[in-house]
Image (tube, rainbow over the protein chains, first blue to last red):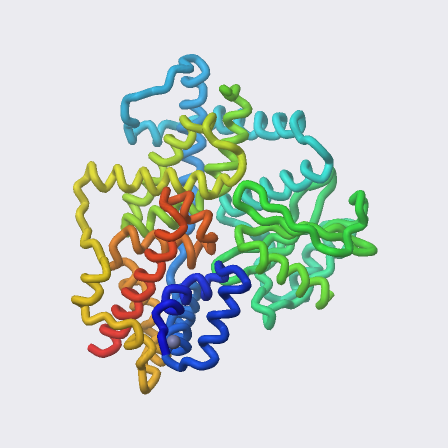
Length: 260
Length: 184
Ligand SMILES: [Zn+2]
């Protein structure tokens, strides 16, 4: 059997990057060829090992802080002198303090999107995305850290005027990590924090299906490198956000809906 | 188009701050050093900030990661950090005794067993760290960031075919390395 045309397709086959016709031809070859099947198995084990064992190096929390400070300063310089700077940066600038600048950053960020948000759903998507990014940066994505839904649910219910449905999705590969409070759509909301491999999934939940469309089927957005899945049911509005790929995030949403 | 102050800050939050973990992870794997990784990320964000006007608003993660990557290669040049810069072409693979089917030719499933052992975490980390950076980066982008070929192509400024062939070679090199450390 001539394996060489198939060998070149094994990587894109594993990565789900082939068009359906070529994927089918690889599948057919694999059915009759042990050698190629073993190569694919080895590659697939390697993937699992990397994804589960290789460390994911998150940014230390103080790095974001230092950057905001310096860039706040940089921005003011840029406003005064619009011409691009050409000299190389000096590292000591990173350590200059600027708490006032930081405060100004937060205020101007909020004000800007309120003015520019094009429609209510996009505005909510932006709030959810910003909330997700902010929590990741504080290094404390959870206010209640527990994999036990019987601990997370009462913690949230005690602090909100509603009780968010918290389900255990460990067997589906989405273990619960905890929860926190946030503010979105003009009200306090529950955020359930789940994990999938090295990715964090925030599920924003609040009562009322006030979305225009009555979305019983999840809708997926991609914005700025994050994936967002949005759906509603009879009682609640849901926004799931993660840097996880959209297929896995949709699987998360479907598992949640089924388990609820 | 030139952004005003508040628009720049908003963009900065959306692009650099939102994807700081991804930026740091890539820089850390490329530099293989915690301190240098922070330097590269900071320099990259400063560059990103200056070129915010050129960001098309579509995918902040790939845009920032492309800048991190460029910053790393400039930094590496400047600091004359020369790891193994060997080009792994087909001849080099052949010289290593590489043969496609030998990767699957593993009668007692030693790869599978090896991958399940306790020390597999350390071994995969070392194997990945030893890859030349042009192979290491595609593995990090594909497996840890789970980006598509198209997104990786944007980041490394290369055609999709190059992404595919680098990933393929990177995986073969990793499997060979893991087989070798298992055997020894
Ligand atoms: Zn074959």
